[in-house]
Every structure is written in C-alpha cells, then in structure tokens.
Length: 233
Image (cartoon, rainbow, N blue to C red; front, side, top):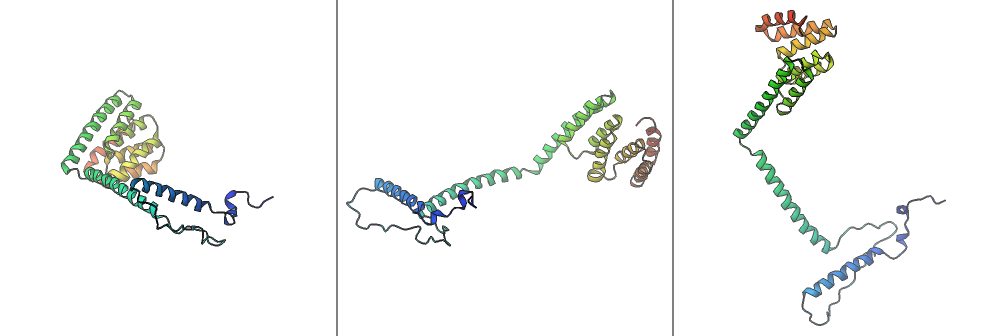
C-alpha cells in the first residue's frame, strides 16, 4: 500500500513535461492573435520573439513561481483602480452618514423618545389592568427605541415581580444599577422587595441601606415603600 494516498503528495510533475509551459504558450498565442487583429498587416515579422522556458529553473528543490507575466500585471493594475474607485465611493457615503448635524441627531433621539413614551403608556395601562405579560411586551418595544431608559427597565422588572419571576426581575434591576443609574431609588427598592420575597434578608437590608445612603432626601418615601412592599409589591 502506498504511503501517500492523496494526489497532492505526488511529485511526478518534476519528471514530466511542464503543463505550465503549455498553458503560458497558449496564452501568449492568444495575445498575439488579438494584437494582429488590431494592427494592420505589414508583412512578416522579422524580429521573432524568443520563447521563454518557464520551467528551466524547476528542480527537485526549487519549483516555486516567483514572477508573473506582464500581461496579467497590467490587468491587475486596471482592476485595482476599479476597486479603489468603489472603496472611495463607500468612504464618501460613510462620511455623509456620520457628518449628520448635531441638530439632526437631537431631533432623531427626540422622535425615538416620543415613540418609547407611547409604549411606556401602553405598558402602564396594561399593568393597571393586571395584564402583566402584555405590559412586558410594550416596555420591551419601548426599550428597542431607547435602550438606556431606567424607567422602562424598572417598570418591566415590576411586572416580572408580579409574575413571581424574581430572577428575571433582578436582571433588569441590576442592569439599571450597574450600567444606567447607580442611584436609581426605585431600582434599589424594587430589588429589596424582590430579595425579601426570595427570603434573602441580608440582601434586602443591604438594598434598603444603599437606597438611604444614595438618596438622603427620600427617607419619607423609603419608609412608605417598606410598609407598602409587605403587601403590595
């Protein structure tokens, strides 16, 4: 059984006629015929071109192609110009997009805020009617327009708390505290109420302490929330 099973391991091409030579001669003849069609005939060409033996330097240890025909080099130059033109056009369109004025960006964000606020109102309406799943859908759609809204995240977390999906509620509340607003009072209080229902007394007390420390002027509301959360949250 032969040691090499794949044809790419064979080296018979080193001992046989080069197919590269045949192919290059064929291309050269094609190029000559095209040039003869373009130029008027002026008798026989006395300056016969010397044929190049492309495989003259091919040995057992050296069989790499280190140069290419000028014919292909010319084609590559022309194609590179086309690529450069296309890339320049892409750069121009990209620059037009990022050169939008400050006023246009503000106007676009105001429009997104308006749409997100509408979804928030729809979510609040469904929440009051205890359609918590529908409310979650509206809050989620609003976040697609304004993904950095603490209000939408905390409202959605409250729906999850009502559905007793406490771990999912904590994901929204932790995202608000860690990424959007570390002082968000409602996020800390909702988190405290969630941990209370998960029987995590240490976590509950830690959240209440953080809410008081970060919101000194809201002590009255915090006490009101603690009383209400025992039954309402």
